[in-house]
Image (cartoon, rainbow, N blue to C red; front, side, top):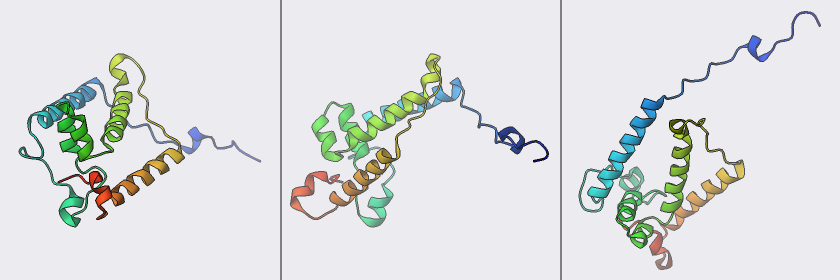
Length: 151
């Protein structure tokens, strides 16, 4: 074969997108702290300005995240049972968000940023769990009433 063989560099590659700096990460932390403070102070069930869930507003159905704000408010006030009554998956949702956020914030303590990488089977299992939860919480079966968000 004549000529040089193409390499990744010769074929070309897209430059990596610029990573957010310290100021951007601190701004995200500040914004999340402000939002968490707002959810703590203003009960989503009775007052405050909160967006309506599109699934609930358009279809009258609870999505897997419905009840998450009310559950987070209850959790911030130490009412764990009430939080789980609003959304049984709240610990899973908040835990996953917390881990992903912590990995993204690692550069603030001098460590390299990491991404939450799960195997395909885990993402598939999570999708099945969320889908089954969405269906089960909307079924008109008395035994499954505790899954509804009580909106």
